[in-house]
Length: 84
Ligand code: HEM
Image 1: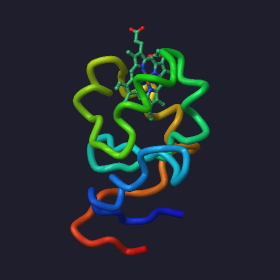
Image 2: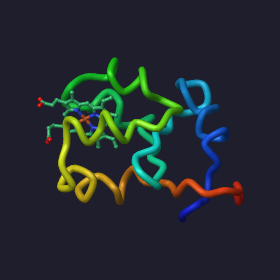
Image 3: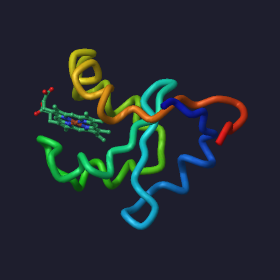
Image 4: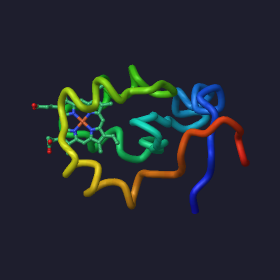
């Protein structure tokens, strides 16, 4: 299932109480259940929860990482209007 989120909506998902979402390019990922598995640790991911992390993501990963994890973590995309 794919939803459309506004950046403002994603920004409310910044800690465990409401789930942790991050934006990479035009997509939204729910990393709540992934944070403790992240190979470089949870801290760095918690710091960008609720935000657009595209620049940082592409500093450290390649397309293959997104391909591998998209099916599990992608929950939708960023659009002008939230269709929740
Ligand atoms: C959907 C989100 C993310 C996924 C699925 C993910 C996955 C991974 C994986 C699989 C690795 C191991 C190295 C590799 O296979 O390339 C890794 C390393 C790393 N990740 Fe992430 N990551 C995510 C988001 C982020 C974000 C937002 C940041 C920074 C704010 C970050 C920072 C790092 C760093 C610094 C490393 C270590 C790179 C290195 O050793 O060269 N990651 N991540």
